[in-house]
Image (cartoon, rainbow, N blue to C red; front, side, top):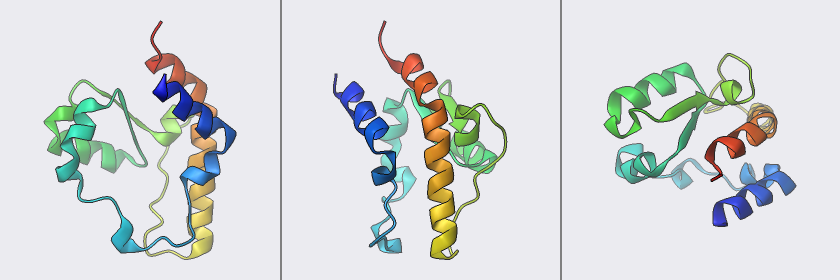
Length: 117
C-alpha cells in the first residue's frame, strides 16, 4: 500500500522528486557501497547510463538477477542520459526534465511489473 501511495505522489508531482534549488555536492547520498541493502531490497534498479549498469553489475553481486534498466529503456527508448555533474544549471534542468519524461513514459510499465496481482 505504501509503495502505491508513493507512486501516486510521483504521478501527481514528478518534478518535486528532482529538486535543483539548494543542491550541494556534499548533500549527495553516501557512497553506494554503504547502501548495498538498497540494491538487495530493490525489485527494479534504474540507471542513467550503460556504464552505470556495467559498474553496478560488476561491483554489486546483490544486483545479479535484478531488472537493471536505463531510464531510457524504461521509457521504451535507447541511449544514455548524460550526467550533469560540473555542468551549468540549465543543463541540470534539461537532465531533470529528461529523467522526468522517461519516468512518466515508463511509470505504468514499472507499476505493472512490481505491483502484486
